[in-house]
Amino acid sequence: MGQQHVQAATFDWKWYYSAARSLIWLALIVAILVPKANHNVRILWILVPLAIVNLAWLAFKRPVGMPSLVASQFDLMFQSMVVGTAVLWLTAGYLRKVGGFVRFLMCFGTFVAAACLAVVSYSVKFSREVPWFLTLLPLTLLPFLVLAMLGAITLSRRLSGGKYRPVRFMLWLAPWTLLGGSIALGGSIFVPALVWRGEARILDAMLMFAMGGPILGLCLYLLNLPFMILGFAHPFFRERLCACLGLQTVTSGPASQIQAGESSETMPLPERN
Image (cartoon, rainbow, N blue to C red; front, side, top):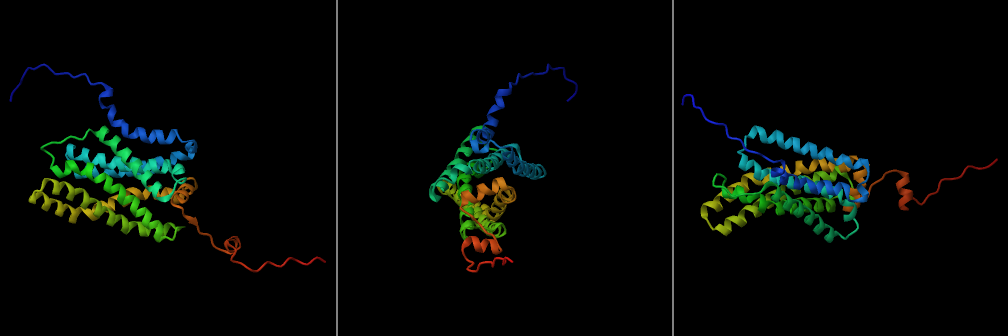
């Protein structure tokens, strides 16, 4: 367009304009500092799965080339699940003191609180450039995803016999999480579709359910995997995992038989000369 002589426009941007983005991480900081059970340097190991899943998310998001508005919606959903999962591990010491159903409700409430902070942090907005189901998806999908994750863990614990068996637990967790992801996606997209009562929207919802359900379940399993590995591998978090889920450690050999009262024979004492 040729040379133009225009004056540059300046805008004074304050740091606190984007401070709301940090609210979701405030829950994580509070969960680390406030409970006395977390006043241990070993609690910092929780940052390892956090870093792994966030780096994996960045590695996935950049090649895909999501538009900024769409990426913001998925960032909301992803960070809510990640921070909510980390906060559960940090507060597991208090959760083991209550009954099973109350514990389930407290876990669900922790995730909902993290989701509310995420909504404020990411300032969810409606836009004509983003399809309606992508705008509503984070808000409607989060409660279903939380129920899917907690339900899969509960069922895997039952099918493991309530005993500490990491391999068996994770093998059961995989299909239940895949099924839970499909159910979560189905519930989150069919409800808005029925509210709008549009035939085209219902067809879009059915297509998303068929194609995205198993993928969402797989993503949910991979998101939870680093945290579960930390719980199985590190003694500090293993104690919390067993206490929160009510898992009994499985031992083998004569020591376990004597401890369980299963051995009726006694070892003979050496004779004195």
